[in-house]
Structures are given as C-alpha cells and as structure tokens.
Image (cartoon, rainbow over all chains, first blue to last red; front, side, top):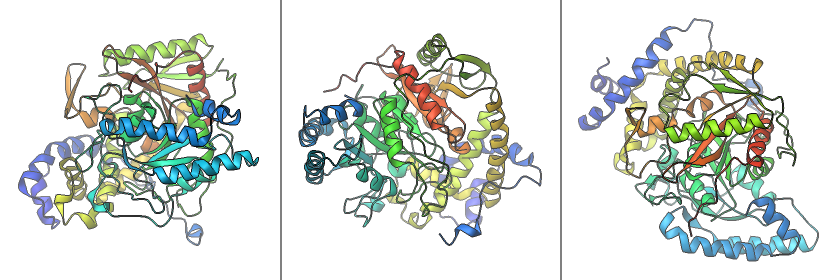
Length: 58
Length: 461
C-alpha cells in the first residue's frame, strides 16, 4: 500500500499527522478496488472528459 | 396535499395563493425550530410573490401548474439577493446577484419561493448533520438522519413545509434523503437540467432535481426546470417532452429489470421485503419483471469516488489553507482527494466511458431497472457505521452504495417510497432508466403509486 504521509509531503500538502491517519484506511480501501481497474484499461479507451471547441464561443 | 391538488384548489378559488403561502409559513414557523430544514425563510418575498400570483390568476394570466405553489430550494442554488451558504462558513456572507437557471425557471412558472434549505456541508456527505448550521432532523423520527446532502429538502417536503423542493445529487444526494424521508426524489439525466448558478461539488457528477410528495409532482417540477442552457457546458439539447404521466399510465408488457446481483447484497430485511413487495405489485399490473445480472457496480462506485474526490478537492483547494472552516468529515474527504494523482483521475474518466458502454447493453433486454435506493433506513443521527448482513459498514459508503453508480453513468433515477420498516421509517426504491428516458421512469413510478405502492403521510406536526 502507498505511504500516504510521504505522498502528502511530496505534494507539499500540509496535512497534520492525525488527519493523515484518519484517511489511510479509506484510501487503501479505494486503492484496492481501483488499481486493478486502472491497470486493466487499454490505450484506445479515452477519458469521458470532453472539450468541444465549437461550443466555447457560446 | 400534492401540487396537482393545490393547483386545482387555487383555480376553483377554494383558497388563494396568499392563504396557501401564509398557512405554509405558519407551519414552517411551528416546525422548523425542531426540524432545522430551513436556513433562510424569505417570508416577505414569498407573500409578495403569492399576492402577485393571485392577481395574475384573477387577470387570466395562468402560468401553469406551479403558479402560486410554495416551494424552497437547497442552499446551494444561487438566489438573487438571498444569502446562499452551501452549508459552509466559507459562504456565510455570500449573496448572489443573479438566480441559478433552475430558480429562474421556477419563478417563471409562477412558483412562490419560501427560502433556502439546510444541507450537508458543501453537499459533501449524506447525513445533513451540519456542524455550522445545525443537524437537520428526520420528520419521521427526530433521532434519525434525514439523509443528505439535500437533507433539508427531504425533511421539508416530508413535513409538509413546502410542496416541492430542489436538491442536487452528486453521489445520491437527492435519492438518499428521498428514501430516508419518504418522499419522491428524481435525479434526471446528466445534462437534462442546467447546473448554472449551482455551487459545484463535482462538475462531471453534479445533477439538479426535485423532491416532492408524489411522482406526478416531480414530473411537474421537471417540466419547469428541464431544457438546454448554452451557459452550461454539459447542458443537453435533447428534446424536452411533457414528463407528466397520463392518468392511465399502462405498464403492461414493459420489461422491468430486477437485479440478481449486487443490489440485494447486504440489505436490511425490511428494505428487501418492501422493495420485493412493490415489484410484485408492478408485476400484477402487467409489467414483465425480468431478473438480470448487472455489470460490476462496486467497480463503478470506486471509479465515481475517484472522480468525486479529485474534482471536489480541486474545487475547494483555494479554501484549504484555513482547515478550521471545514467539518471533520468534509476535511477528511478533501484531504483524500488531494492525495490522488492526476493520472488516477484520467484513468477514472476512461473507466467511466468503458463502464457506460458496458452498462448500455442491458437496455436491449429491459426498459428500466428497479432496485432499493438505500440498503438501510435512516440511521440515527451521529451513527458512523451501520450493520447490514452481519457486516459493520461505514454509514456513508453503505448509504451511497446503491445510488452512486448512476451519477457516474449519468442515467436518470427516480426514488419513490415503497413501505415502512418495522420501526416506522420509510423505505425507498429506485427506478433507473436509459439516458433521457425520464418520462418512462416517471410513468413506471406513477403506475406503482396509482397501484397502491407508497406510505401514509408523515405524522409530524
């Protein structure tokens, strides 16, 4: 599992240690389900976020 | 009394909009100190609007079924000249200078605006136990949560403080309070109702919709607020129809999907009993109920959570320097979102497209799905866990477990009350349809309601 305290430090986030300890479990739980899903993606699958240049003038 | 009944009485001069509004304001004054459903009551403005509604009706200027009907909105909608807090001290002094799109539509339809409704802080949670403005109480039992984040909306409709309310739904925030408070709640298709003027939590998951005391009332609200808005990048040009189901709304031959997997795993026994009973009733009305396996909803929930965590943390990042202005539960979620890498957000949006394609295949075999809205009835205020199927679960994850995936997929979902648990709390079921098929799920909901599926009025007050 990831070291979330180190991740926070590397990202320059000022999260107190007691607050980090409170979010470790939910983050690890999410990681456990999400990581295999992310690793199963194939390159042709594009993100659902869309940018439509023709509508930017609206 | 439903909106349709009130509208009929207004036109038959049984009472005026002013009398209706005055009576409703009296009820708010009496019950709101206990329920804490309203944060701001705009009584003066409401009485002025009600007088105008009466004058317009007398002059033959009838704006339709919402004309003169008292409504209120979650305190996340921008309202011109009226405090809009989103349930957070960050916005404690924020007074918008224009109305949200949906508010303008309601006013155009002649609705009388009673004020702004309490909610979970920043719409980021499901209890509506707001640490800054007080916990909303469930009108069915004041010791229990009304759900959230649109908890004030659910409580106000259930307690008869308003005839309809608007809420927002990012991971179940309309359907959960509807389920816990025994009201109807509709999350329309993503893009069906403009998000302009609604404080964002998660741009790609936020939806606007109504909470009402009947299915046809929800349809009336949707008629008023649906439609294209060029100022909202996600707003759809999909044609808007009349969403109100006919008096006779047949369901004979309609293929109703009834999930065999996921939706009945770890569900309270009373919830399962009520939902299965309602589906049996639908079958007796001629619907063709088909058991089916749905795609991996747990995977969809995880994907939706990654998107929500990232978007909400990006949205609120400018305010994170002052951590003291957030409640502990919201702060924990914001911290989580800040720790997820951008690549995970992109992966989640890729998975979303893949899951959308996979889920769409089920519409070749069924017309809509029916499932419980929440696996549990309203938990006690302050409970952090809930026990379901012998497992102790985090109350937020349990409560959102059956609703969150429809935010990821953007599909319309209607929650209706379908019974009471042994301890007298409402149970909700949800009807899920293909994109932009709100008229279909409203028809199914109305058929169930007409067929006797429902609950007695909330005994409060």
